[in-house]
Amino acid sequence: MNLEFVKNRMMFYALSAFLVLASAGLLSTKGINYSVEFRSGSVLKVHFNESNVTKEALEKALSVPLLAEKFQKSSIREIASGDLQGGAGIEYQISSAFIVDTGNETQADKLLELELRKTWPSATALEFRNIGPSIGDDLKDAALVSVVLSILVVLIYLAIRFDRRNAMVSVIGATHVVLVVLGVFAWQQVEFSSATIAAFLALIGYSLNDTIIIFDRIRENQKLMRKDTFETVINTSINQTLSRTIKTSLTTFLPVVTMYFLGGDGLHSFSLVMLVGLVVGTYTSVCLAAPILVDWQQDQTPESSQGVVA
Image (cartoon, rainbow, N blue to C red; front, top):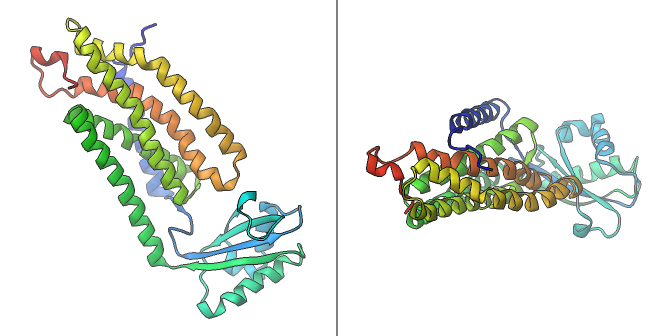
């Protein structure tokens, strides 16, 4: 079976343009739902011995008039059993945009604790901390720098390993994946946390790995298929590595699906990045990155129609 990826590349270009434009539209209209780490607010951890505590029940408890002003737009996340601070039971982390004065932290802490005890007598506030606007801005800057630096390092490596054109195509592909995944985050308003940044960095490396393998095969086939056109070499290379790409993606995709549905709120954003990114990254490597080389040749002379992946 020889699928015509290069022949149908204009269709893939159109699909990618639609995805990028849709993502840009969602990002500009809905924006990113940053966690309290990236915006000013407070974080409170509460421990319960009761087994009937749910996220929905906590949201209802926080909607009472006494608490609504401070916690009306809270993000509630169940803490994994291995990270409990108060011993056996259930713990939740409540993140809110509300910031209290240092002198009133204990009052706000106890206010919530007393209100929750009306429904769950064992409710105990374990930790209450503020995150100021300057800290959130610093974290945003650090996250942006880490992503940009990772892409820059990859760009330099690929420019040395292959050539400037291949390096740029690889970075375009990685940027395409990141933009589409960010669009999904804006669409679903999933909380964007520090774990999300780690997932994006892992995803960039993973998606680039597939692209590099295809570029390696193109370089090998250029020596073996000297009489064929550059388009034929690229299409053959994609088809030869297709089975490996699909198997690798599936073996990673299946545990990520399990992590997404069974990993709890703490792993939700991380697994969503990997889940969507694996699909988009595989598509980008196979259908977008390598075919772009056909339309991005340094010159169009007959001698150069064979292409160069040094």
